Length: 500
Ligand SMILES: Cc1cc2nc3c(=O)[nH]c(=O)nc-3n(C[C@H](O)[C@H](O)[C@H](O)COP(=O)(O)OP(=O)(O)OC[C@H]3O[C@@H](n4cnc5c(N)ncnc54)[C@H](O)[C@@H]3O)c2cc1C
Image (cartoon, protein in one colour):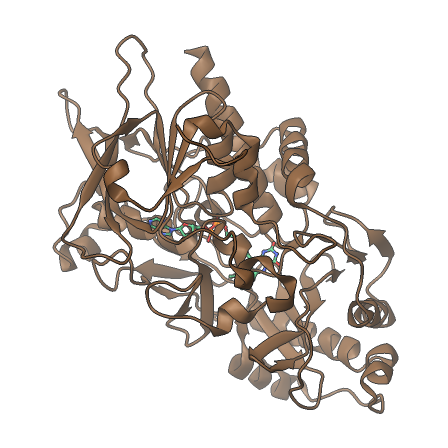
């Protein structure tokens, strides 16, 4: 294969891949898919299919000065961020580019707590190794901007203690986290992790959308095995369908897998389009049923977020991703601030908080059989009383930070002694202003759609590895844990295969 420097061969020409076979097929070159493909390539041939284009040379992705611009420059089929509005009426985004959502996000990097790792049943040593593998390539210590330093003081003034300095660990108090932006302001997405694999063993097929999975039915009964994928050009006609297959090694008992890493919206969507999901829902779309797996698309969660704009009006400031965080109230609240563009020459300064462990859950369903369109998703923000009660407490804390002496002095406003509102008013504020922190997950949860090895229940040769598999939130910002998960599961698959 022709490789480009240390980078795998990339093509947008579906004909170069059509009809070919690979040991593993990874669907979705996102936050989890890239480290996974890199790891599998150490020993096997890998096809990595991504519906978006390359992040390299695109300043909207790579340049910190344009952080947030990709979210305000979206279109239906090709922008690097695809916007969607959940059925709750909340505007949201998902990555559509190699690197996935790590190419459009805030770049804030923070490991999951030891407790989360234990509860997931992961091997703690291997988890540490996998985090280290990621961090050696794409994680940096930020040089705090004046605004981030002010927010740090604001968090401490509000009592979010102790001060933990720079740390990648999820610890209570106020800390500076890692970032994927380097000292020159260049973003390193998960796509950079592809360089850590064996580039000769990977083909990256760009601008290609996977429509569904191809199956074999084994002779004995109804157990299916994934045999390959069907895909279309992302900007082409949905009638021009191509196929790629898994290698079927003659003398080995073990065959590779199709692995879905298409994210919390993409992976359940592809399963549904492949006939795996709730029977009645598939029937509504005339999709032949392969497996009546009711849990596909269920349990979708997004952390309810409230953002207070602390500046009095939009100004032309440089965008700033978050670099510090307050982890408060027994890990229940996460508070961060940034400078976010609202147009090409105006930005706002939100301080935002999320409920780390929401109780409310929603679901994802198809809206169309076109894989390029968003599925429909409802998160049911604050539907449970517990979430609403937490939201009230969270806003009270958020107010303390935004009205702190440090923040007020920096912005040149008088610190307000009186904090807002009765509980009733705060309840209304929560309901009317709930938005996303962009950390949504679920739809293919471990224990209901995939087993502990991330293999699908009831189908062989098919796995899901990405944010759709989380049963609960890692509490902290999820990118670090998803990059780690790609590496971790990749190593486990390699080890598992050696045993056979
Ligand atoms: C605006 C924003 C800001 C955020 N800020 C932070 C932050 O600062 N820190 C943090 O930790 N987390 C942050 N997050 C959350 C974090 O980025 C995501 O949780 C994480 O990146 C999701 O990873 P994933 O691998 O599950 O999916 P993704 O990274 O989204 O990858 C899915 C990939 O699959 C591709 N795909 C989907 N469907 C198909 C298909 N049919 N065929 C082919 N390809 C397909 C997509 O194009 C995409 O590249 C943010 C998210 C957003 C959107």
